[in-house]
Length: 173
View (cartoon, helix red, strand yellow):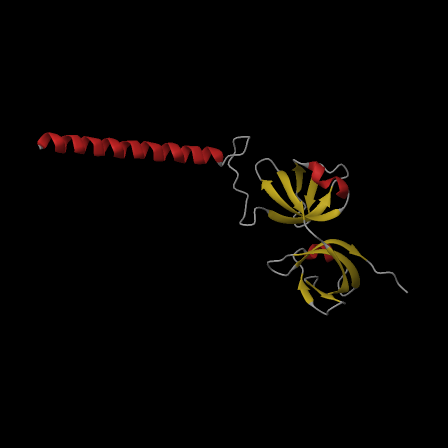
C-alpha cells in the first residue's frame, strides 16, 4: 500500500511539473506569435482591429500625413492608396509607432456636406438637416470661422463627430 501511494504521489508530481512546463512553453509561444515579423510586439490594435485617421496621401502613395497631429507615416502597403494620391482621405490603419509605419486596412467612406462653421471651429451645422456636428479635427477649419463652406468628411460611427478631409468654399452666385 505504501508503495502504491508513493507511485501515485510521484506520478502526480510528475504530471504537475509537465503541466507547468507546457504552460510556460505555451506562454512563450503566444508571446512570440504576438510579435510582428520584425520581432517587435504589435500592440497597436483596438477592438475594431485598427485606428481611424484622416489625412493626406503623398503623390506616390508611399506616405500618409495625419491631419490631427501633422505626423507623417510610411505606408507599408501603398497599393491600397494608389487611387488616392495627393488626396485627403479617411483610413482605418494599424500603426507601428516604433517604426513610424502604418498598414492600411481600408479606406473609410466619406461624404460631402455644406453648412456653416461655428465661430470657434469646433462645430459644423449641416444645411441638409440642420444637424450640428462636433468636429474632431477643428484645425482643418481655421480661417473659416462663421463661414458657409462645403466639406468632405468622415462621420465617426461611434461618436457621430466628423473628421474633415477637405474644405471647399461654395461658388458665389
